[in-house]
Figure 1: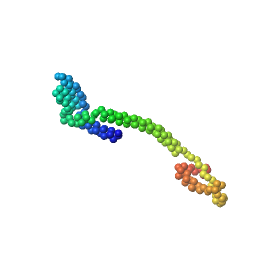
Figure 2: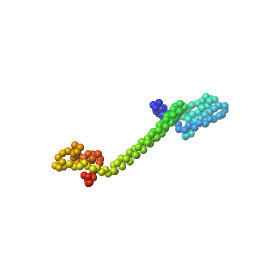
Figure 3: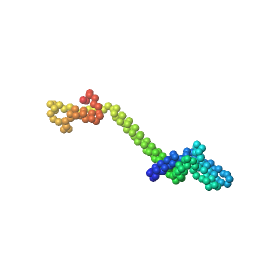
Figure 4: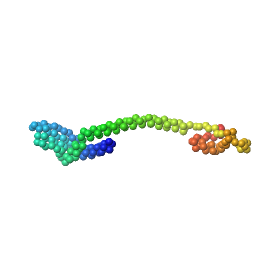
Length: 166
């Protein structure tokens, strides 16, 4: 349906752009016949009918384009365009309603990130082992290099402030 509507919109738009702007109709009763005239905003005659004399048609230099626009503007086409517009508006409203909770989540996460980035973290580094004093491994069986620990903390984005516990 989307492609059909797109083509229909293009067709109606093209015809409307070529047609005389603002057709205003007047029914003229007289001499036993029904006469009808349709004028553009500028007062130019667009359509004239005289049923008694069997005279009718689009007139003027733009008559062919006006007739094409008239033929394109059948109720089925207009209703299809209105339906497509209403559907698009419903989808736009749904999309906006669905978007709001995500915007709230993003704001919350931004606040959390800002808070985490502004915090100062205190880390007690593992006890230093002096190889000469302690020729054996730590009680857990691992050796820690202070420089390696500092490098890992920096890589994790944790600022180490020299001082107590260092």
